[in-house]
Length: 282
Ligand code: GUN
Image (tube, rainbow, N blue to C red; front, side, top):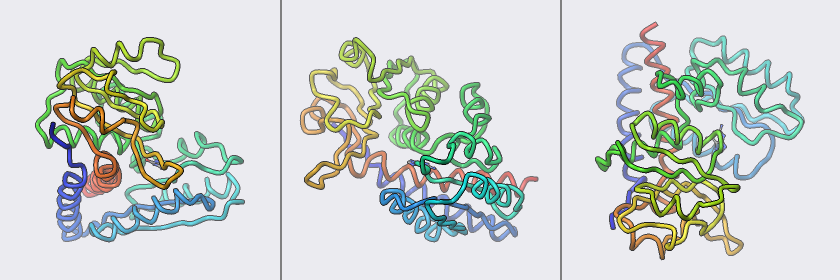
């Protein structure tokens, strides 16, 4: 069993990002990412702080907007408009979840698709589904990067994606399909999940339930990717995979922490560089 070291792949990706950012700066383009956080959600505050820190470490200008919980939808839309129009801004990210009084899809669709480094805008979702170049959500993109780094080819492999979220499950399925895998997307209502998993060469667990994937669901030699980040009552951080029992059966597996998690921010930075390169070409 080989551990897929997302922390190491993330560090390598960030090093590449930093070099590309320096090259862009030398040609007069300073890559810039705008991050908007609305409200006081603790987890979101932590994520946003990590994104800001990663930008600084990789020579990307970070533009932080921390807005109060009672910010109106129109005020948020007005800020997005300003950032859309600002040619010095390459990426715009609105941290989710948003407060309940704000319509999330209206906000996500207001971000200019060419600055949508999260890959959540319908134009980018459609491009990914059509196999066209666009922005791809960072977590599934990070998983593809890990597989590439370990020279794992998914062509012709049976892949089971557990979870159908817009952020992970659906884009993961499309990336795998575009890479010639045979993909089954499963979720909480799937009836024969165990059977599908046992028939899978690669399982991506993104369902948000601690210890959900157990050893009896995994065939010998399978590759298991754990997207879960679950905080237990005792404070421990665990994935969606029952790692201790599943790992001995795997050819490769991602740990939690140190697997998929570190890749998300690295790919956000990579998407920001991609956007800045588009600006340099324009
Ligand atoms: N909240 C949890 N994950 C994400 C993400 O990838 N992007 C944004 N914008 N918000 C999130």
